[in-house]
Image (cartoon, rainbow, N blue to C red; front, side):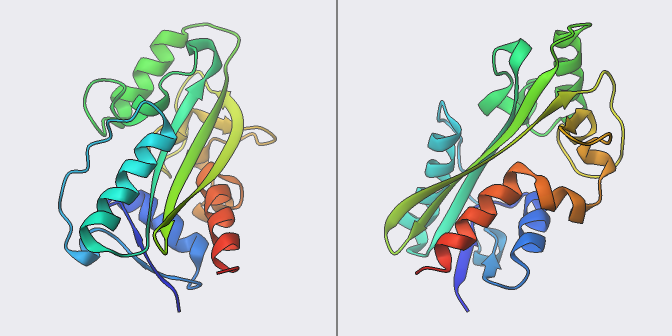
Length: 192
């Protein structure tokens, strides 16, 4: 079985990706390989941040690996929070603060179109490959649901009446931006 390092210690991301991979690949986290470095996301784009993570792990451990960067892009906010999604309110990982900032900036704006975007940088046999996933939706006026993480309670995917935070992990993994990017990564790995 192929082995692959996922350059993250985000337990939510690990759970989503592990559920999607379903034993097709032996997946390891940074914790699994003893990597406790804080990999700074200094890029200006999702591609750059994903690449920073994968290159850091590959350069240090010489293992096949992938890094991802994901975020919410709100049309009425000119694409914000974008690459700053995790630290939009000023504190990394402050989900409530991030949600509140988006809702406050949107106010009563009627254009609530948004999307989640994931970019994966895979380094396989010393070559870098990118995979991207996008899901379109709208921003609710208030949070709803307790599942998921990040902006899930205010993001309603197109074609659904529920937010990501109201969907089961299985339902979310059938349609999410991260799931789409992982499917493209798996399709690639099936050819190597």
